[in-house]
Image (cartoon, rainbow, N blue to C red; front, top):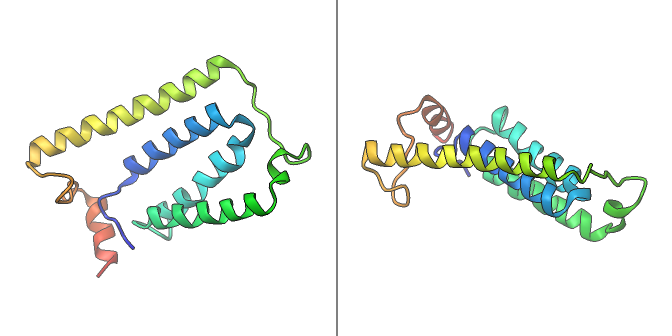
Length: 140
């Protein structure tokens, strides 16, 4: 399952947004279900599993959910619990960085839609980028 149009900037934007969510809404779980859970598929997609980030994300999320539901005390146990600072300034800046990056990706996507006159719902948008060609060649 390769998705050549899901390039590094989409992956980073999603990771930032998802980490901001877990950091703000589940702060004492943000290390496990935020940072570590997002880092695994991202590292894989930038190294050995190019183009398959979505598949890697689904697999790591499924494994985490099965583990967390089998051993629910793991997340809240004082031995494994990772508390954050609970500082509102940090919450704001984590969210601001995620929002700014995602707005940047959205603006870039709109630019590409206008420039290429492609509908991103019916056609791949970033076919002119080198990374797209590299991932597309892996599918052959």
